[in-house]
Image (cartoon, rainbow, N blue to C red; front, side):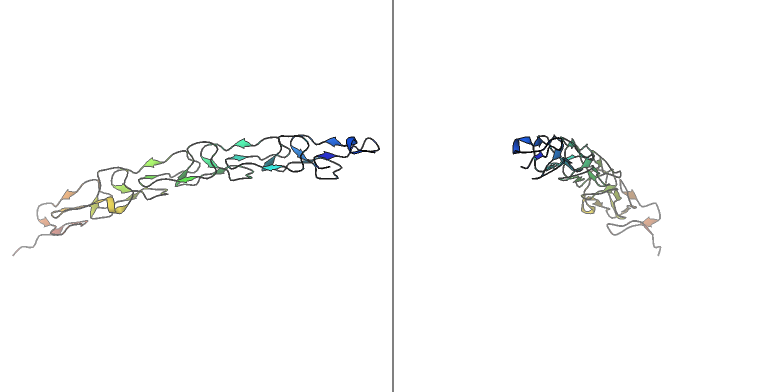
Length: 193
């Protein structure tokens, strides 16, 4: 029967002469030998016909194992994983046993792989969902707040001032220059009559 193997040390005359297959192995019907569970699978019981795939959030890289190992924080393990997959930049796995990495939320970013958290977007920048780097507020806008998720959240520069790329505050036009429009990255020379 399945889960048992032939006893090659004797002349078998009955089913009771079969030997049970050990943990970490399986024996299909009419097996002469045990077969070790493949990487990504396990068997924690004796007398089994098949091995079980590691659950999502766990992995197993060795053959013939009776259990799977928890996937570490900073990585993810899909069902049947042989090894953890490191989270890529812009994603994270804050705890162990996760089946997938999570994208950094808007207003946060992660430049490194294998991360357990994301970094707040700094002042003068914005970070969309899944960002691996902070992007500066565009010229003509500024932000003195951290954690912005989109360029729409950067503040438009007012008349009489300018805002360079990545500005954290507006800058007043210097004497002899003007800026009559909003949302500008520089001032113009004042016209004299």
